[in-house]
Image 1 (cartoon, rainbow, N blue to C red):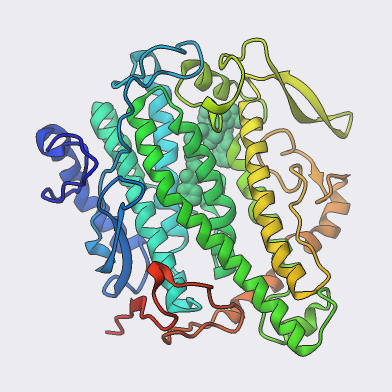
Image 2: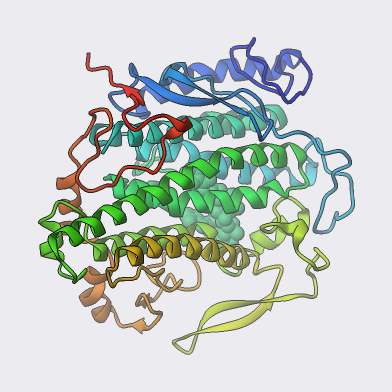
Length: 483
Ligand code: BYC
C-alpha cells in the first residue's frame, strides 16, 4: 500500500508510509519490536497490562476522524507509524536553504545534526512512560487512570515515530541509536535519559498533571519547531504527533484545574476563607493552593531547562541548516534568515537580570522559551478563573524564568520567584516556601488512595465536566484486572 491517509493494519506495524513495499525498514522494525514489547512490559504501567482500557487508536491521519475508541489491553495496542499528509511543493522555509524544495532524504552535511535531534526527541518519550509507571495504582478515578494510560501508549507511539525515522534514514547508526532508546532509563545513575526533567520522579498525581501541563507543553513547542523542518519526513511525523499531544496537555490542564476546583469547593463548604491556612485546608482531604503553587514552580522551572541555553550556537546552526525552525515559523513576518536581526535575551549583568539584544540567530532557544511562557500563562489564567469563580482570594503565578534553573544563563545563581537575585543562605532559608518540601510530598502521597469505583473520584479532585468520547459519568474506562 503506498503512502495514504488511511492506516494499513495488515502488517504487524500499522502504518501509512507503505511499509509493505519497504522490506528493509519493515524487517528492521520487526526486529526492534520484541525489544520494545520487553521494554513496555518491564517499564510500562505497572500492574495493569492485563486490564481492558478504553483507548483511542489512530486509524487515519484525517484531523477530523483519526481516532477510534475501544477496549484494548495495553500490550495489544497497535503502535503504528503515522505521518501527516505530504504537502505539495513544500519548501525549506528558513535558513540558508530557504526556498529550496523540502528534502525527502537526509542531506549528508546535516546527518549528524538531524540524528541528534531525533534521538533527543525519541529519548523523552519512553522516559515519561518510565516516570509514570507506578501511578495507575493510586489513580483517583477510572477516568483519570484511562487518561494516564492513553498518554502512556501515545508516548510509546511517539517513540515508534522517531525509531521509524532512525531506521529508514540513518542506516546502521540509526539502528544502534534505536537500540539505545530502549537501553537508557529515567533516573538511572549509569544510563540516564538525556534531558534533565526526564530523570526526575513523578511520585504522585498532582506531579503527573503538572508534568503533562508544563513538560508536555515543552514537547508541543519542540515538536512545533521540528514540524517546520526542511527534512520533510521529520516535519510530517511531528505534525501528526502534535494532534495526539493536544490531549496530553488537556489531561494536565484539566487535572490541575479539577484539583483546584475541589479544594476551593471544600474550603467554601468548611467556611475557610484564608487559602494560606494550610493546616486547616489539608484537614479537609484536599491539596492547599500554596502547595499547588510550589508544584507549579518546580515543574515550570524544570521544563524551562528543556529549552537549552538562551544563547546557543547549536540552535543557530539548526536554524541556518533548515532542520529546526521557530514556533509558527511561516507565520512570522521577517526574512527567515535572521543574519541581521536581534532578539532581547534576559541575562545576568552585574548581578542584575536585564534584557539585552543578542543576534536573533543565537537567541532561537530564548524566543521559543518566550513563546512557551506565553502559552503557560494562558493556562495559569484559566486556573485562576476557577479560583476566582469560587470567591477565594488567591492567585497562582508563574515564577520568574531565573528561578530554580540548572541550564543556561541563570544556572549559577539563586533567584526568588519574583526574580530577585539571592545569596546562598537566603535561598536555603526561603526554598521550602517556594518548592515542595519532603513534608509537602508526604502530605500529597497520603492523599493518593486509589479510587477505582465506577463514577467515583478521590477526595482531592473534582469530576470532569464531560467524559472521554462523551461517555456517561459512571462509565467503566478501565476494567481493572484484579487477577
Ligand atoms: N538537560 O546549546 P545548548 C517532549 C545540553 S519534550 C540536559 O544550551 P541546544 C515530551 C545540550 O544537549 C521535547 N542537557 O542547547 C514531553 C548540549 O549538549 P552537547 C523534547 C541539556 O542544543 C513530555 C549542551 O547542553 N524534544 O517531547 O540549543 C512527555 C548545550 O546545549 C539540556 C526536544 O528537546 C537539558 N535540559 O538545545 C514526553 C527537541 N539542555 O551538544 C515527551 C530536540 C541542553 O554540548 N532537542 N543540554 O553535548 C533540541 O532541540 C535541543 O537539543 C535542546 C537543547 C532544546 C534540548
